[in-house]
Amino acid sequence: MSTVAIDIQQLTKEYDNGRGCRNVTISVGEGEAFGFLGPNGAGKSTLVKMLVGLTAPTSGSATLFGDPIGSLEAKRHIGYLPELYRYQEWLTGEEVVRLHSRLCGMDQSTIKPRIKQLLDQVGIGKRGTDRVKHYSKGMQQRLGMACALVNDPPILFLDEPSSALDPIGRLEVRELLKNLKNEGKTIFLNSHLLEEVESLCERIALLNNGQILRHGQVSQVLYTQTKWRFKVGGFTPEILPWLSETSGISIERYATPTISSATTTLPVGQETVWLEATIDNEEQIGWLNTLIVNQGMTLYNVEPVKEKLEEWFMDAVSGLSHRGEQ
Ligand SMILES: Nc1ncnc2c1ncn2[C@@H]1O[C@H](COP(=O)(O)OP(=O)(O)OP(=O)(O)O)[C@@H](O)[C@H]1O
Picture 1: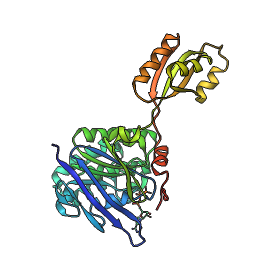
Picture 2: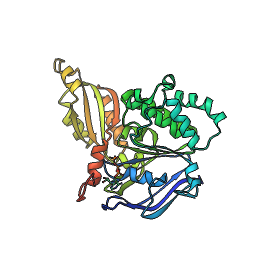
Picture 3: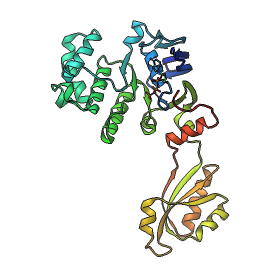
Picture 4: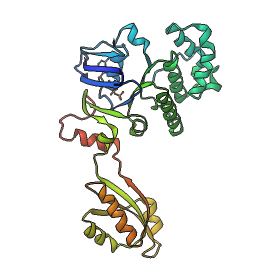
């Protein structure tokens, strides 16, 4: 059985104004990446602040590799990237990392080569001697990653690591996180970005109004929908009712802007379209593929329709009296 890295039992923080997060119970295995999703104000940062020992719980408990949160032993296990943290702007990037290494009580003879290696790893190695005030938000976020990694901790708490980054920066952070996971780090990732969580995490939890609404394997939690899209060449409109009737599957034409504009001038029978089918089980996908090909059409692509986080969230909170921000 794998070792439990993060064990959270009924953890609750109630601020004076009644907000915070309530009765969170999660267990994360060593080397696992866990995604914590939720809208603004749901309580994600509050949970992480308790876990890293920055704020005391009102009730409940949690341990990191068996050590109670808030203890020095627990803190030795962690690296923490706070959300949009502002570093000392009068220091250089290298000096900020060195400061963090000293706060961790690290031996200064070992840290010197490590600073350069860390800044290279997060993609700001060439700017290490520049002052933080000349860094963009994205560079400051990368600097924060270097600080979180300085003591080579086994557990990383990352609060919105991509929030200030452009799309390329996000991809780079995603790669970095994957490498860290491959190295065996346990990662607890707070994020609004479904793609980020999806590409890294095995399990996720959705927090709303301070409470966990759903949790489980990403594949189980996110892809409960049964819609699939088929990209089909040589399509004629008459085929659609025939396909639906023969397969017994509800199928509609799905219009993407690129395809509809490109196909208006094409003769009937030479169109390439996307069809969207609502299926009950995976065998129906094979059945539909066969029917399409047997009708002389070309099947270019078959893919599941992924719910967007917003849709997933709206679905999860539907029927609740309170959504989103507390
Ligand atoms: N120190 C505090 N005192 C009182 N209320 C607070 C405090 N910190 C946070 N809150 C409130 O607790 C709730 C949860 O906040 P939290 O920052 O944990 O949410 P979040 O999910 O991390 O949001 P975001 O994604 O916007 O960062 C919010 O309503 C927030 O206003």
